[in-house]
Image (cartoon, rainbow, N blue to C red; front, side, top):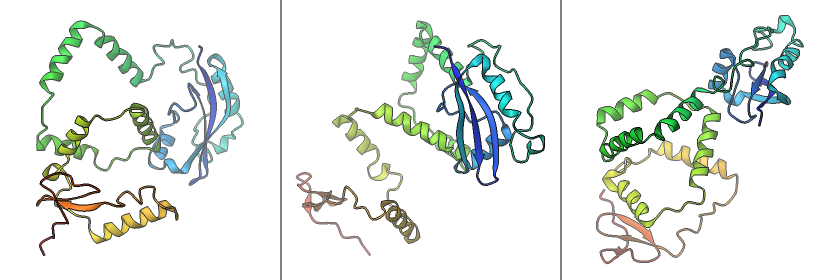
Length: 259
């Protein structure tokens, strides 16, 4: 099926500016615009931008011509002021390119990776590497370096939406086995839990409480009765809430904290 495009208009409510452009592809494929100026603003203030589709289902051979007609409606004195657009020139970037050259970087990487992994020699080599690194534990230096590389960065709303959508699709209809649940539990129990032995400050507890209260907006949480008819149990080391005794080593009641 031949790809079609659309004409869009972004509006920046903070600075009362517009951006007019066209795109060959799906309306919800995550494309923002070709203007670096506007993209940088959107990256830091995506909540201030709203897009309107003003014409869609345009044949790729007529898309740039249609965009050019819409651009002509912008007054010269509005360029760079009322609009993020700096020019009304008629560009012919991708119309004469073949489908291979129009692929995005991610699409090219995906295509080349699939082609490489279909080869037996490459697949065999990669499986050997995966097996070698299966139980590898990252050093503290590697963890710190990775953490610092991402510190201060914020995901755009579009990226968050894509991650959420991908997780929803990948987990849809799946149920974790008892073995997997136990592995996850063991991996995050006691000393393995990064929050073990720590607690939130009173200020942070109040902030969390206010945020939850505001998000509920008077509604009663669905899990209100999750501990109904249950009791505290302890094994001499930790406390656990359950309606039945967790095991032979457990007795009813909580361990009192030492003051």
